Amino acid sequence: MTRSVTIDDIWKLFQETDRQFKETNQQFKETDLKFQETDRQFKETDLKFKETDLKFQETDLKFQETDREFKEIALGFKETERVVKEVSRQIGQLGSRWGEFLEGLIAPACIDMFTKRGIPVDEVYPRVRKKRGSKHMEIDLLVANTVAAVLVEVKSNLKVEDVRNHMERLSQFKSFFPRYADCTVYGAVAGIVIDAEADQFAMNRGLFVIAQSGETVHIANDEHFVPKTW
Image 1: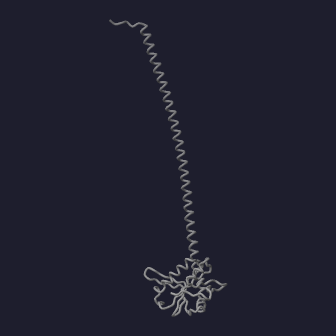
Image 2: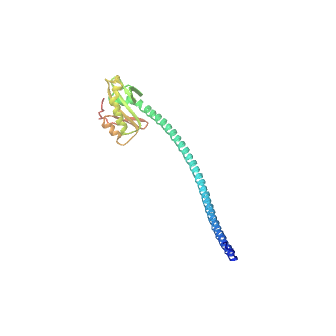
């Protein structure tokens, strides 16, 4: 048997429906709040992305500026390197001319200086070069005759190491120049500026030392000096 619907039942149904609408409305409100919060978070995130992008752009500009500065520095280094090479080239040319000047100053005096020391030379040869296989030898001034030869090493600034090198040159001279095999060979070093101890170092090893004296040059060894021979 069907129960008849009363007004009370209808009222309760309306109340339940109203309650459900209210709950649904509350849920919509909560959902809306969540959407609003999510939207706010999205906006904050978007703002952060924009700020980050701005920072990246600023960083990129700084990198570009730094790259430009590095390129300018590199160009500066290249220009400095070019200037240094040019100055070195000019100094090299000057050094070569200075050496030629010294040889030109010393050469005319050699025959007279060594003749007075009992070595009767009568020929002077500047820049004598000889190659033997892969090795080569260069003598600044070769002062000679048929029985004697003097090898003169000329330096604008004479150092002890120059003396050592000349000693090695003297020991190999006859193997490079066999035509002087029967000659008595002497050694001499010359310098406008002579480092401390370089002159005494040379004399102790039996070499003549030629030094500047005003506008001329002279042999600095005393009269009792006995030269070494090869």
